[in-house]
Length: 229
Image (cartoon, rainbow, N blue to C red; front, side, top):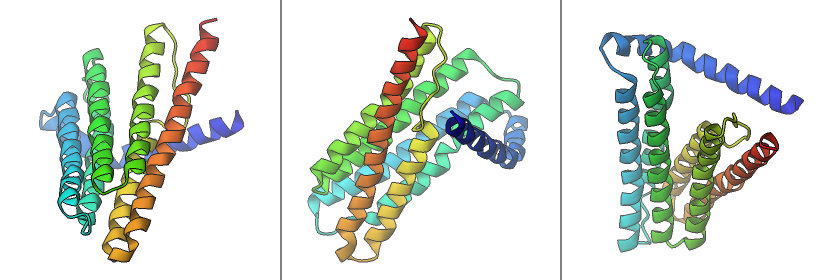
């Protein structure tokens, strides 16, 4: 319990630090008349762009497996993290601009799931086109776990329970995915002999999400089971 509380305090402290940095930009957006739903939509479009870069790398890999476009994977990761920050911006715009709404919360949650579907789906496509079917399967399992973490929480809230336990929540999944993409891209661009190492790094990142996201989902089911007794 102490370990969990310590992790939560560190996570909350990091979050508050990020809010302190972004709040001036948030206030500028509010003065410009930007709404939380606009910010959420921009975040989705950016994540679609990141997924398109990764999927394009997969398409090119199909036609020329010997020359993988690792630069596209790097840029995919960079674009992904930049626009994933909008996931924090929309909430702050809503809070500081006094625009919090139940529809906004629902809209944000739905578009978050779309972002994960696009990004992990694109990575799975890239891996299978590049000749790594096992890596594609691991990424698919990561995608299943990612969706189920959010689904269990939503179902728990539907029956009156609060269920936020678990390590591999959306911010952690985004960080692991981005790190996997950027490291894979950088290592892959250092030379053709490093291709397998680069792809292994990406697959390990997906494996981390696959394992811990599904553990988180089942942990939440267990919490719900206790709460509904």
